[in-house]
Amino acid sequence: MGEFYKSYYIHTVFDLSLDSDCWIPKAEIVWEEQGIQRHQQLTGPHDRFKIIEDAEIYAVEMAMAWIDVQLMQRRDAVTDLNQNLESGLRQQSISTLVNQNR
Picture 1 (cartoon, rainbow, N blue to C red):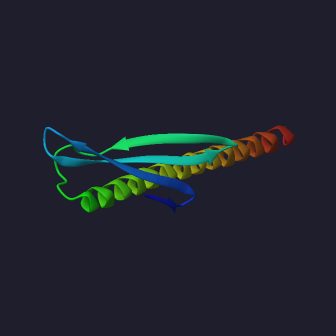
Picture 2: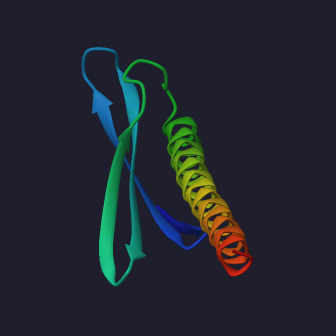
């Protein structure tokens, strides 16, 4: 199965664990970043899902949660960068005013 979520492509696959007789949910996440295709593979628990549809739901939700964390971290990094730039510009303006008044 495959679907898009917030510009990321999620492809789910499943393996059957012979030890636990359960389906192992797996997700491959694919996205493009600055013209480069990126991949992330996630694997869920090996001993929880007797029904493949439950493993599929888990795999998709696991991938969506991972994507949300990545986007939140990027947003926070941009916010920090903007705050640092603004702080630096304010400091530069204050220095310029102080030097002009001397």
